[in-house]
Image (cartoon, rainbow, N blue to C red; front, side, top):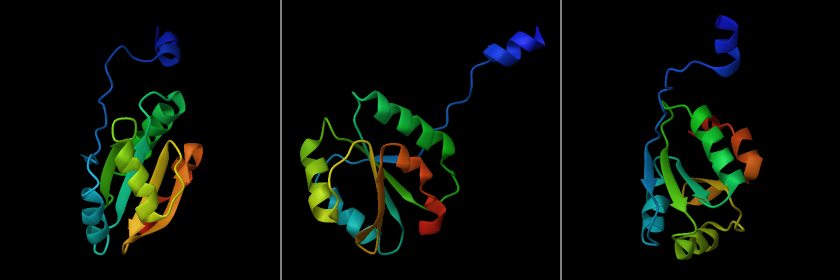
Length: 127
């Protein structure tokens, strides 16, 4: 039975990892993110809730994220808040992609990535 358990996994539910996301729902929050980035790195994750690739990348990001990282995390549902998504691109000078991760320090984008490249970024280098 141990062999089948190893193949199919345990029937015990896994504890779901929850990140300290802050919902990004209003354009006015971008000024706050810019200000906070002067003392603490800010991360914006732009996510399309209808895209399978975006969901896969989000799950990988959550699994790999170090909960001890001293970062502020913002989650942007770009389908529900398209105006905010557009303004993120203008304000932080990044062409829109989905999914997309922006790293903001000292008021500017210091790194960004989209799709699978999101999970290749070592966030700890920006803390």
